[in-house]
Image 1 (cartoon, rainbow, N blue to C red):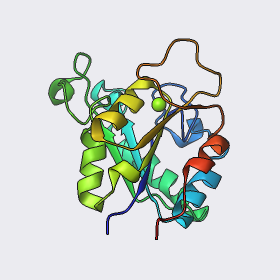
Image 2 (cartoon, rainbow, N blue to C red):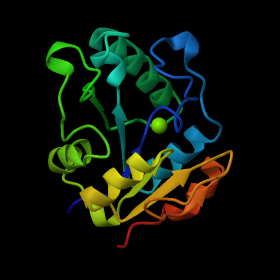
Image 3 (spheres, rainbow, N blue to C red):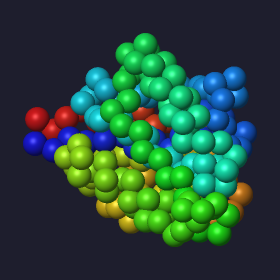
Length: 184
Ligand SMILES: [Mg+2]
């Protein structure tokens, strides 16, 4: 039987988005992230991180640095009894990428590539899954992939009309009611 997933953007949802975060010292957790992922695990969701990392393509930091930070991040989640099942990243940028990183790639959100890859590899039920992002490109990726529910995390509120419209949450705690017990 296929599994439901909680898809999380990284910068702006898991950690505060200071721009191109790539060092442990600059990684500041967003309040409620462990409670959210712990609850998702308890209810049988796979937890999947899908993150654009154009900073790699732009040459600001390397894939090795990204993996080092990711290993540390996953360890923190595991210690909080909220293990992450998969982390997918897109290092490309269509105009600012250097060398092979300069390209349009379906993995880069708003493209659905990372979500579809996770769905294939983990046998996920996307229609019953939940996504949380802090940009409209996250929501667009969720819709393009067929994720059932996508939430915009906007702790400072929303100024412009949303494209596309979607539920907005001001705190990660507000996402808890969207995680539901398994159907059977
Ligand atoms: Mg983000």
